[in-house]
Image (tube, rainbow, N blue to C red; front, top):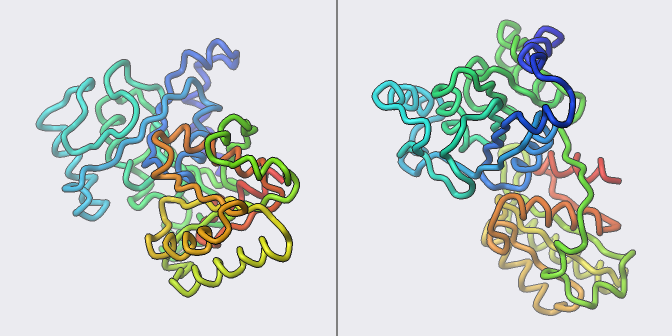
Length: 312
């Protein structure tokens, strides 16, 4: 682990540690727009330099292929044609600008954004590529991989002793957390005036979705909806429900049925629908977690759990 840290420090060492020098470092944070990926990418990017957040994913055609095949297709496309200022046809840019000077760091925090990170690093060898989390391709395709220790041990142990120790990997005790304080103005368009009467009795409920490790079914959504009704009726709580990028339409439907009967006490915020940009999405989410006196999060959102605990 110490050897892998020295790799990152060696790249950073030519820069001085002053705020002015950090402002000169161009850092691209490449994300798919999800709350977890955006927050984790920003957590590292803000500490490396001047962040430019870009929501960019592989095109639908490229997503049809397995991740490792996508990597080799990106290499093949770049060998045939290379233009640093033009977005490759196999990428979809949803937010930000692609043209301009290439970054010093490319921070990728989402699986669907890996082809974009590979394209940036391949076009500009001076760019240092970092993946935050566990990538779905071998670590060697990035200059550095940063992920929490529990995830590294759980994932790499299955590969055997030869692959369980990666030279370009930094294992942190906890996930990288962006704990910037949220601002009340980000919630003005979301919360009704009734929530101002109970500022210390607000519960945030963050809903994820089905994963192989944490199965989420319609029965679970119904159970959660019943529990929210009890929060309102017995605890007289105000509830802010957050639909993430993982929340299924079926789960949303069941929650909305309950919310329609308690419109003054339950507010819904669909992160991927109600907020247009990734940065605004992260800011609103930070503000919700800060304002809530209690936070309920489904177990599949491991980063959100660590993030909420870090703010307590």
